[in-house]
Image: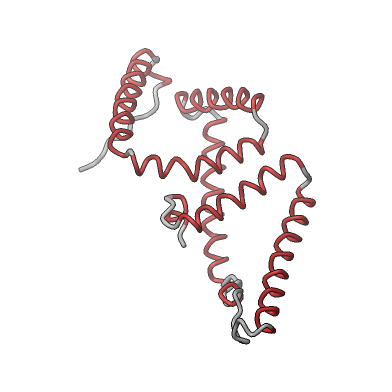
Length: 196
């Protein structure tokens, strides 16, 4: 199942199980150490598997199930190896994104573009307030909940949301135009002209 299908709740059982299990793990990490959470979750999973195996064994012994039937056979058949070409492809993509991000941070910190640097500074200033209100785990939990709710809300109310976002974009463009008109010429970013 793809990530897009999960967050759009196309299969509610799969989406709910992924959403719920990760949410439980994140909330648990808020209150217990990561090692304890991993150990308890692993013990819980092991207990469930042992219970299913015991149930299957008892059902076969009571002749209420066939000897070859195994409810965990679908999970046992899943491929768990990662192909080496996929790893090298992902590492190349990760290196490209990391290099691009580092270049952008250098550009922002060295004030290559005043407007972008001011936006970056305001974003950092806002993050100081967000950091004082929430810890990282709370933000991670909120992000996880948002990832599973916003796509479905947007899918159900696409026309209304697009209309509001269009109006907000027009207003932001007007404000940006006014700010750019007030700025001195040497601080304005260079405009790249499109060639036809």
